[in-house]
Length: 122
Image 1 (cartoon, rainbow, N blue to C red):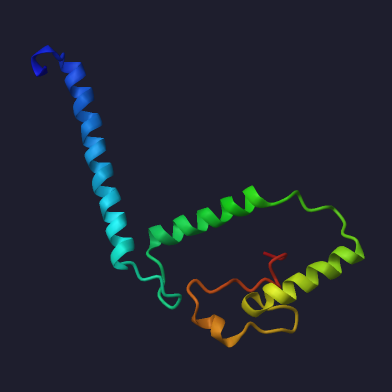
Image 2: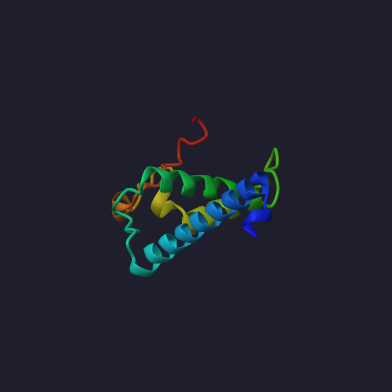
């Protein structure tokens, strides 16, 4: 069969084969990394730069994709109260709040959650 392939066909088959082998090797390495627990996911150790970038991009894209709608220009007092209640219940321990420090255990997280009180100025 190789005798019947043109040089161009042979080059295409070679490139496709090389990509298939590279993909299989990558899949094996990912599976081994997960299976053997080689990657340290502890919250007190910084991620490798490429992993940190990938996680950050994933978070940004996820927020954009799952945001229900654009924020209204004005909020009702009920929406403001609900927002404060949600923030107090789920967010303040990591991100702090007006007159409320972040929980001490948060300082051991990597990356450290941003302090959001002054986020509007930034």
